[in-house]
Length: 207
Image (tube, rainbow, N blue to C red; front, side):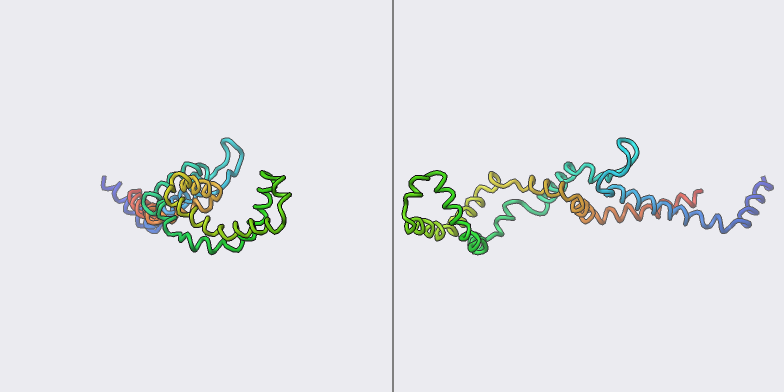
C-alpha cells in the first residue's frame, strides 16, 4: 500500500505540470464545445453537405417557420400588439406623407377604372368633365386615406395579421431570425457558454 502511494506521489512530482494543466485543458474543451454547440444552433443558414445524413444546417434556420412562430408569440405577448403598432400611426400624417404620389396616381387609376367599367360614357364625356371628376377624386383622396386608417384601427384583427407578416419576414430572412433569438437569449447563451468552463474545470480536477 505504501509502495503504491509512493509511486503515485513520485508520478505526481515527475508530471506535476501535466496534472496541473488537466483542469485548465478540460475547462477550455468545455468552453469550446459549448461555443461550437451554440454556433451550430444558428449556422449555417442553408444545408451544407450531402443529404440526408452527411451535412448540417443550423437548428433555428432548419425549422424557420416553427421558430419564427415561437419568436412572434413571445414578441406579441411581451413586447407589442397589432393595436399598439397602428395606434402609433397618425392617419393625418400618413395621408400627408403619401399625398403627392397618391394624387399623381389618381388620374391614371381613374381613367383606367372609368374606361373599364363605363367605357362608352367615359369616352363620350368632354375632357373638361373628365378633368373635373379627376380633380374631385384627387381632393378627396387624402381624406379617404385617413378614413381607411381609422377603419383599420377599429378592425385591426380582421384586416391585418401581424403574426403572419412577422413569420413570413423571418422565414425569408433567416439571418434576422437568428439575431432575434441571439439577442433575446444572450444572457442564457452566455451562461451556457461559461458553464463549459466551470463544469470542464471540475471534471478536470476529478480526472
